[in-house]
Length: 388
Image (cartoon, rainbow, N blue to C red; front, side, top):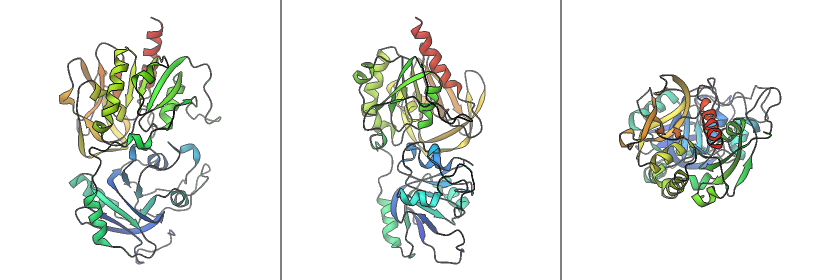
């Protein structure tokens, strides 16, 4: 819908919450309906990376920052091939892109990829609703005619089962294994291929972001990516120096049904292990801890996390609706990081060997790069092991 459309014109999009609250707006992108969990993200940059982050499967993202779409989109910023988030909600309609890197505008990009956008929404009020009641189930609809069956949309939101008990890693993982050698973006070359990396890493893809794989390659890793359902035998057959557990969507307890046995097999082989986000939760489950659903989760690029081993505070990027229950961590597992927003767990490590994970995203660079050292720590652990 054109940015020139005024607020007095008939709404063409509707957000129906399961409790009956309705938010009208102006639709853009693809027409149709979708049902999902509604979350908000406080990041001021990176809307394309957010929409293509597989961890957002099953979720509609409300952006609290109003300028969404003004830099357009380009293939280099995709975290996976296509948008994975079910839809987006913004305050102001996307404008024509103004950035030298833009190859397409956001509206057309969403339309081609079947994702609904809603503009002209009071995102402050919507965010308050999410904070007050927890991440609600919603039905999102875009109809250029402005005609909606409100009762049916509210019912769809109420009837949706939600993310608890839902394994979404199988939906977003790779279909088969592949090799990765692309490194982090650097001026002026852009993305380049790694050469001579000697650390053989198997990365388990629960919904891996491309920039995580780039960070591994830049840290000296020769990366082979395996599907989420890979077994310990599949992993160990590649004779890796270490194993990486990626981010991903859904309920960790559901994914853990097949992931935990694989991780336990890797742990028995005494290999260094590093996990991020869902990979962190998978490792915690394998070590005997539990995970719980959060009220509205953590979604943004400004989350302060304290490293309890050094006392350092890092500004991090986060995207998770489940968390590791630190009260269930077994003996021998140390809590290494916590959120300074709510004290929730953000990192664990085994006390006797290089097995560790974090809830936040050290590969994301929304300004700070405070947590990149974790990739180097993983690489150092593998080199130490190789050296005997």
